[in-house]
Length: 213
Image (cartoon, rainbow, N blue to C red; front, side, top):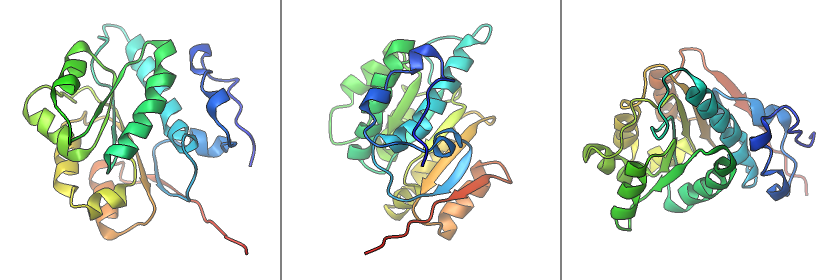
């Protein structure tokens, strides 16, 4: 596996390399728009794999004429609070030098601070399906400008019964979007979700793990 080279990235995105303890495959990092059946890659390597393309996507959107800062452009859904927070920690630190703000939305805690963050303006929204759907229905989380979507551990989200929430949330995003799905397995429900919300012919990448004893 080749160690990651950040030479081609914008200067303000070359910042998290010192925190990556394990090398990340270049092909893994820059393969976006994928349905990926993956092995157990370590954090934050996996998050960087979709986080850097997400940050570059947001930067591009903000550079367009008439673009308004503070509107969600990127959505990341995770099945659990812990995973959502891990993703948010990486994206918050990585986005700070480029002025890209993130918020993490999850249940089991007060909505107040999360609502305040949304109202103050963020470009990346990370969270669990239940809390995010609640805030959408309250009218404080608007995703109509979101054009980059990541579903992490998609099979697990569906196994936990979040399919209605995931579908409702995705329906709020822009109809023109890039979408990345990470799934350890490829059950029919995940395949159906991909067919409905992704390009009719998505790129699929499968990583096979061989454990030798």
